[in-house]
Image (cartoon, rainbow, N blue to C red; front, side, top):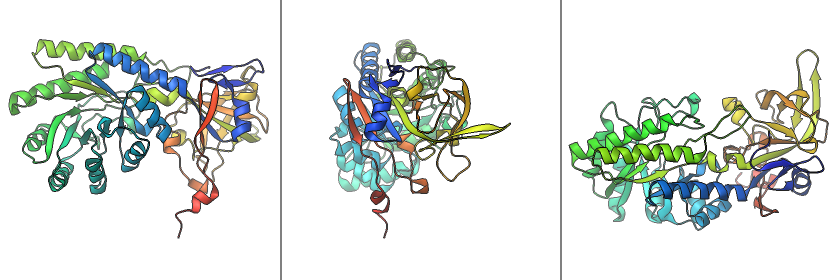
Length: 431
């Protein structure tokens, strides 16, 4: 399976953004993340243009930083006119260090610390998404003490089953995130905020899950959220100005995946929003969405060097690579499906069944099991596709393995976006 950023060249090698992955592996070493910056920018523009078209330029695309976060990424987002959704002080700090405009930053999280909220207030972030009453009270006190006003959204659980993995479903009543509608706590929270000094209620937010292929759950979520906005107006006399509908649009990891075009989501949901507002004489709110994976996920690959091919007769063959769960923990966590290619044999047929094993001292350190590859050999370069999201951002130093570098490809040129960690980096904070 080729992706939107990969192809096979005349040497039979896998390419990304037109560049030979075998040559990139030789130049930068492995393991290595490679991302197509042109494709990232194209995704940003497609989403922004669709948002502008369907909501008459009264909306904002917020990139979900947790998918992939580094200073280069924030510079790209700024140049493309997007906003940023951050979920920690670290992501906020990175964005600010990259010169990203604070007013286009929305700060999320279910347990923000006082220090993080203070940083958000001092830097002037555009919105703080409040998750619970304790946070509302803390934010109000901090804002009052600082002589500032915090513009907030409330994270609402719309009770939507998004048909996705249990670990990445976030819209149901027993989720750790946000306020429930069914219990009345969401309405109580808005009522409390309207009376809290230092707090300005800007709007409401929801996010129903990740890697969702169906459009209907997004449409249903929009209906539920607008219904709640109507309830707020009717019972509290306050008109919600902003509606953030979150993200979660699915991408293609393997051939069986069938994601809809991003334009399809935007068109369908906008019809629901505009239709509801017209029918109920409700002012159309400023609309935000928070795509992450759908901007970067299928723009990246990871390159490894095969260190051994170990066959256990009658059982399986392990193809061992010089990376693993430290750079891609998603198979260990979710049994996530990936497509893999022997990059220097990409033109050949896949005729070999293998389990891709990582280098960690951990039996669960696998990337895929019983997957099809071109016949592998020691020293071959293995590429795992669609690793642009939740790989670098979820990487760890387990077994004291240094984190990988990130190379960006743009206009047929490659450049380093994140340096490879060194052993010295690993001990830098040890005392």
